[in-house]
Image 1 (cartoon, chains in turn blue, cyan):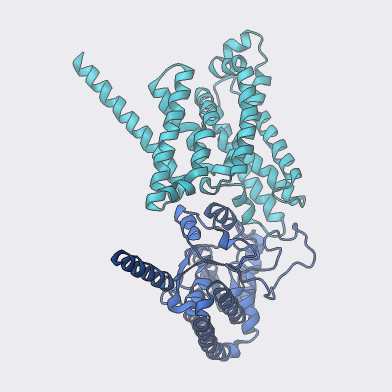
Image 2 (tube, rainbow over the protein chains, first blue to last red):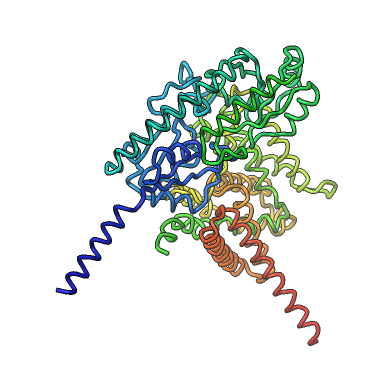
Length: 303
Length: 278
């Protein structure tokens, strides 16, 4: 009788532990990670694979990534070929059926999202990056809204027990986002149509949302140094149109941006797509966008 | 531990079965004194891929494969024709030149492609941690064919690597065997860079071969010792990579370097002791 009691209490404790155990959520990039944490709250353990300062196309794989995927209950990826170079073999290695494509545990944010720069005809010769459109969509708060809903939907179907909590957190976060987005739009409204130079074409969604023109690139083709003529056009355009700001990301050449800035009087502004890549934005998507919008507005307002 | 084993299983299998041929070829290129020919041939093959991409083929189309193969043969022909006869210009200088010119030409070609395409260069360079069983099988198949060719014609290949002057005297067609050597070598290097990445490929070619050259004389012994060193160092590198969560390829390269350091130090000590006891 006593043994039975012990076994029973152990079983109960085990059940309680299992119920208490948090959902393991792996996100490929820090922006999805931040939103997953906001939506999942105390019911999830979020792990992010790519470092915020790392180019998500080219992530250096480490053995721990496979371990993390192996133990995950849900995976959040951008999709649209953002992680195509490294995630599929890691997923193969993780042998985790819960994360297989089509399973509720495999949350692909690009699904159902209106993408920019989708090639009219699928001709790889005209840009074999991004056949499904530009995957750097999270710089638009609208995409973040879509991502949060998608993540909540995924978490609810993987972990129905905490459905109420996820939905409550989602609504709260969306409300925050609404307020913030209104403020951001207001802050950048005076600069509608302003041209901003960038290193690569990674900001079309940001430009689209905030009415900016970000179509002048220091390195028009990723990885290929610009030709003298291309660089000449950039320098000349910045001078002629009095373009004030050149934005660069952590993994881009600060040296080239500084050279162009020195010759034109423009300012180099540190931008980043992933929370944590700029100081004070760790694990917080809203803080990151806040920082981008406020520093850009300040730089554009400066004389 | 079983989890570690599960994760590192295929990289481990790859490092057990694939370096054998690389060590053998490494012994050849050390004998020939053309250490960087592997990097140069891989770069020439990559140039062929750039041409294919410019002609609108995708990185994994068969046409791309043909282009990169054809360029590899051109590279082999260049190295065959430039085998030093006089001693005015060392062949290593020409190998270096082929490497940088091929790399720069690739950059020029890609600057004419619509998107530049950083990705292309990355798709040509693999990561041993991400290796899949099917890739190991295909690579092993190609290696078996190349190894067979080297086994059947071992007399000729050995002759041109070890004593080309004698080989020429014995009416061996040096240029033909040279070309075949470089062409097969180019194919092996291109494939293995795709799975292992540049650093690890170069290390597997050179470091075990150098170690075994220090330790033993006969080819069979050198092969055995080289393979043993490769296996031990890759296992150590993989354990370190797993325990300390480091990029796997780089960890193995450093482990191979440490192995060479240990062997060198041990031989140095032995040598000194021998001298003092004399």
